[in-house]
Length: 160
Image (cartoon, rainbow, N blue to C red; front, side):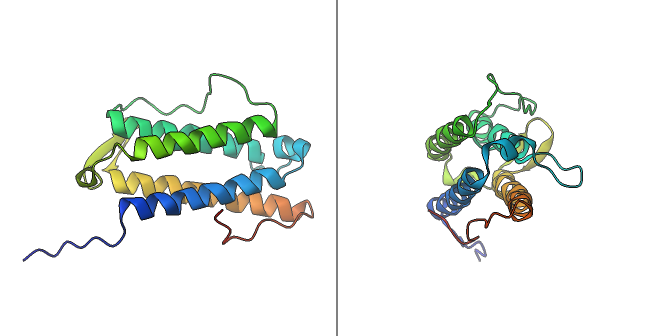
């Protein structure tokens, strides 16, 4: 008896993830330029540093999954981003990269183990859930920053 059931399609999961990415993009946009790079609370990193982490995980990790490359994690980018506009451009580029790499993951591979960054040995689907969860976590920190700055953050259900 086959007890395996698909609850969500890969296409729906990608749409869900990209919805979260769209919301995080709105959070980046909501920050005043200076505060995006400098504001922090309680020793947490400025939101630009968190956004840099998210950029260094999503598309590069998905590329690693597709190419089965276990290269170690690095938050270093080839260029230093010094404006919100540069972050937003890189965010949009990463969104397109994610869409392209996603198409290259066969359905049967989602359940296969992959050693992400050479140190996180989990099924591919679990790695993808981590990408989404990590983004939600940091976006929540961004919401706290925006509220502390007196800025109303985007509604959490915004996905476009």
